[in-house]
Image (cartoon, rainbow over all chains, first blue to last red; front, top):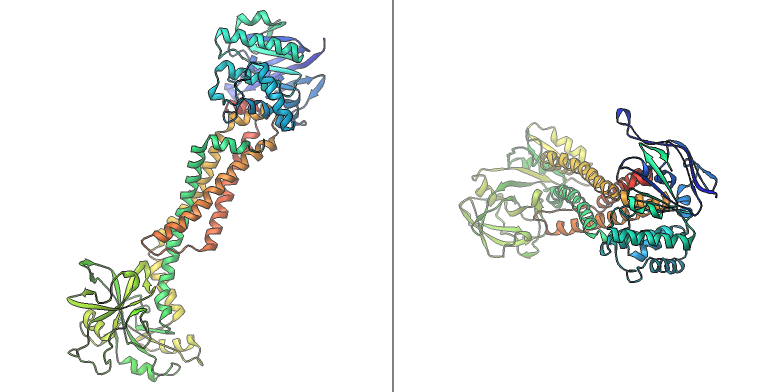
Length: 224
Length: 376
């Protein structure tokens, strides 16, 4: 298998002086094409920081990231192009834009990639239908349940046909029934869109869905 | 999504409206305060310029007409009229004294102007009613049956035939003049110089000052200097007199207001800047999300600047409109200069957009993850 995303010697520190915290400490990691990998560990072990680095929404202090074999240089490259063309992100707190409807929240990702409005609207409707929200196109986030918001978030992440989707604790704010439904949906979407998925979770019950599990502790990977 | 910035603003309409209103109020305050000062300056020169006099003669040591206490004996008129450089017989006596007439049972501020009808010092005709009955100045006796009559500014709201009380005497309104107020909307009451002397100066043969017109073949400053050399009088040109009034009645007493105005400018600049700066910083999380899903920095910057520009434009334009409305409704004369308002509006708009730009630049400079966590 080919590594779709690869990190070598990734290090990220927060704070300064005595208050410095090494969130990710010289981590080497590779996520293979089409796999569903779960990154697990206790709170504060650095798993969110790690996928933020791999997902190019956080710049490492040291180390190298490669996406599809190509080295990423945040100082020299327009990271927005990489984020909209190669990566989809799903956040623990959904982070939908509150003033847009579900349909518009999905369309905005395509709008940023300069997809024509008609095409973007059709794809957004198609994706929302796939995630079971055909009746919720014109609802704002405030009018949706937690599970529905997370499904809109997945539809948005899939909108630009990314190579890899990073999901940070996608089930943290969902009950067990919603969590199971979401995991089933992720499996379906993954099969259908041939997308690699990396999920950060501390939910032991989700382990069964993973192709591979990466265990983290104190900013380091200690087992797979 | 071209209307993304509008959708966001509509969603946060309460905050947008409050921000724009904050800008509106500050702009209005700045313009109104400036307008009050301008209004005082206009009124300071309004009466003096309306007289048509070139020279203002007051008692030595008074600091010029309208400034210090001045009593001049009437005999100087003959001396002035005989002098060189003046239009023959143009020198005229003037009583200019603050008074508290009782109008409709209420003590009111006013300035009594006593002058010789048809001479320099007051209006030649009334816009409504008639001018007061003149006395025979040269042969006047206090027992002469000259009626106590006054011509008032139309803004006083008095009717022809109505009576006001000056001291212990009843004075009848016989005519009205147009827009002749002194500083801070102090109305002018025009009456015969002899009646003014009787009511306000205890019948003494003095006046507060004299006015004269310079022959057009003579330069006014030189004639003024020539008369100023006499030891018992001070002579000022119209320009000097206007300058003195503005300094004495407007600039000196309004120093604190001027200081306040400068402070208000600074405070307004900082507040307006802070409002837009904080408004932008509050959007940090959304900006982080937009960047995380692939928005380029220039896209985010354009989005934020469109919002701040629209909000600022609405705020400053409303502020401009409101200040003109308030100026019309204000209890004192407020004159907002158009050029000044344009400058205030432009500077405020630039400050708003500049602050918004600085905040936006700060927000977009960080990684999306840091931004949407609000850790800036």
